[in-house]
Length: 251
Image 1 (spheres, rainbow, N blue to C red):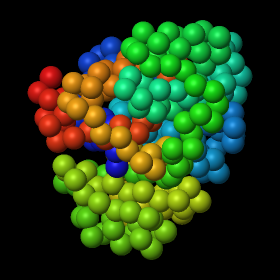
Image 2: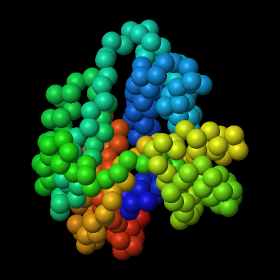
Image 3: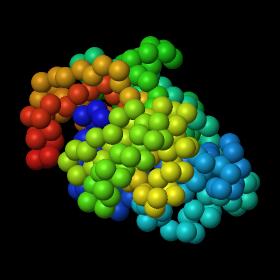
Image 4: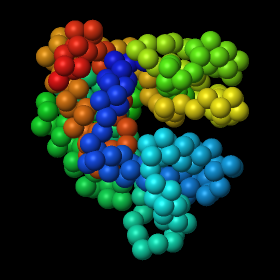
């Protein structure tokens, strides 16, 4: 996995403040709404929705919040927002490519916020397709290595079509082709092996390593993007060195 993925793991281990947790719930709510609108409100037949609900439960999101999100997707409730998914591409400082996935009810506001943040940090917005060629979409899973046996996860993953399985810093990571996503998820669920996180991610085909200070500048830019209310995911081709990782952990 990329260095930024490792940094995301560190952030999870440090824990989230109440404010961050509220933001996490907002993102999970939007994912549930979009998933239900796309494929129906039955998680047994809508795999994306089942995954979104599993993520919400893993974050201790109250059942009432999940139920309200499902009602919103079906048109019930007082909320009248119509969400749409939009993806932006561009560059963070020092030429690092970024892909920013958003869910928003106001596209003009979202693009303005993303452009302003990138420009302020020394980066810039790009046209659609300007950096996507540097990434490939893949199914990704992370598991707590203290809970699950690596060999068991490895066996299930390989038999289900995974391309790569590795263990690092207390987490087991599985990367697989997009078309293997449902098969793998069903296999893990049947074995009662539940991921910390799972989904379709953008994996950089070639990572770029910078000096420590430049790396910290890029990571702060990515974190600021992630803090925007409409941003769901940020992917980059940044490779974080051991020295930069140590600096991040000490912050």
